Amino acid sequence: MHLRIPLISVASVAVLSLAACGGGDADPAAYPESEITFVVPFSAGGPTDTVTRLIAEPMAEELGQQIVVQNVEGAGGTVAAGQVSGEAGDGYQVLIHHIGMSTAPALYPDLDYSPLEDFKTVGLITELPMTIVARADFEPETLEELLAYVEENADTVTIANAGVGAASQLCGLLIEQAVGVDLTEVPYDGTGPALTDLIGGQVDFMCDQTPNTVAQIESGDIKAYAVTTPERIEALPDLPTTAEAGLDGVEVASFHGLYVPSDTPDEVVEKLTAALKVALADQNVIDSFADLGTAAVAEDQATPEALTAKLEEQLELWTPIIEASGVTGG
Ligand code: ASP
Image (cartoon, rainbow, N blue to C red; front, side, top):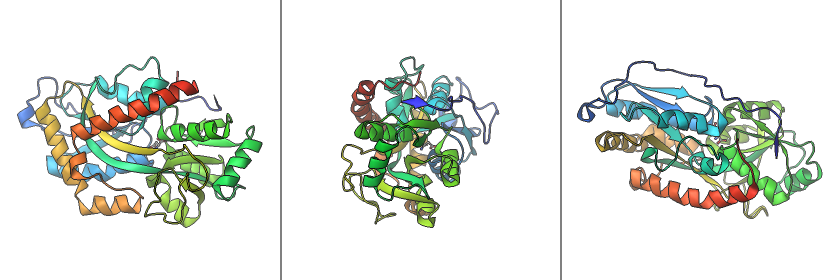
């Protein structure tokens, strides 16, 4: 597996809050007293960013403080997670992350944080299907044809992802393993810009979460081959699952969750969890998630316990698969 473009670890800030926000001696009972920053590990416009911006508004309303969204891209989401793990545990820096939280330890031997030890979990937000999609004029029309084409043209086919550690990279790795090829990967800071290049025809195909693909599949700007979950999804009822389309073993359901540094007081975590539950019950959030091919988790999953359990389960699932693949992010 080789990368054509060097991974760029640049933090670009969509809305950067440099306000003095709390500190180690902040009073948890008074939280929040100033604006809160939600740190997104991928660029603006991608699925993680979209989900964050949708929940930030009702959460801000519930918490009575502004929430600003900061995009800290790089190294498949590990730059942002490393940044937040080193922040003061006062609830003013909150990380949103996806399945990459559970794949990073196996991909990065020198990772400077532990997903389980350096964070407290706030709650699950969504569980997201992924779709295998291609530029509209890419030759293969079905998943079966795609697999055959990729096998025959492994030297020229390009696959986009959001860096080693991204959900798109994990899904692409599974496809490459299933076919037995080593494709040219084109990494981006997030799948927002990857989608732009897919639509523009600069890259052949990719695997991405539905919030980034449903509208473009419907408009015909890109073509879709399969959804990577065991069941078909309501937003794209005609799209077969990978198993139905003959690709066994490529099942990935990503998830989004909120995290804070491990020394954050429980009282602060409880306030964030309560606000998350309010956001997930918000009708605009429910409708928007449905349009994006996903759904808010049930209320009892928007909890620290549920996100920790999910993280533990996913670490156990992906670590041996990634270790066996020999892929590393550095
Ligand atoms: N969903 C993307 C990925 O994991 C990243 C993003 O949200 O931009 O590949």
